[in-house]
Image (tube, rainbow, N blue to C red):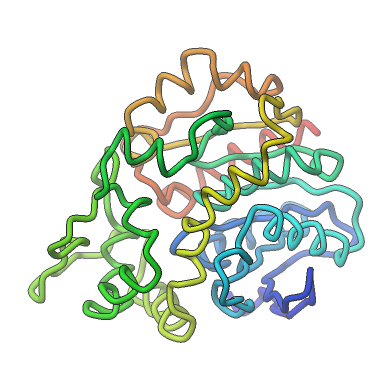
Length: 320
């Protein structure tokens, strides 16, 4: 890990921390993390792909880790985040990049592929398939109608509410719970003890996540807090409003989709039908089939099965 280089770049009006490894002459792979995560989630990919002749670059996205966290929710729109990504690519001095993204990073990478396909060689999407914009229903209205007010994205909406709940249990316990969770299906956060963590909860870490890893995560979130990451969820309806001009647009970059069969999103009603029923391929015509469904794997697929996922990534991007 000590061979990974760290620096700060000014992008789109904020200071962004990036971790990178590889020669400036090598093709760039841009790794985009999700919630609640950091550049650190890509530690296995950074070292592997640098050894394979790529320049691996993993930022802390705005609101996370050592990157600036603007206070306003409106500063976390898809236009802001994609603007950060575009400026980062320009700072690297390259014309196009490979993109590998997970969770919220994957969600935003779909916007990036729509807004700036000219910058994308190929995209490896982990866990979050494309979600076409519904022309008449805002996201939160749709989510509440399907899943109710306790659905986690809905519970994240009120500023300060979930932050207060997290403060009661602490960053370390919350992250231990989220990073190791293997319960399929849509997550719900009830009013009482929303994360299901009691003072006596003792969660054993899996082999792919060490106490040292958890300490790094918790230390950064103790410093930064979770509000920046939660603001991505709070901008869902804003994103819907801002992307009206792209309604019905297909994503026309080469894509590979990889997900675990225990992933909470993949096992949420409607997702499998979209992925396997023709909708995904229709919206993303350059999607390489078949999609990769990894058995017995949960949400943090690139950490849990790093070597296997790295092989899938390399096999795909090596074609472009």
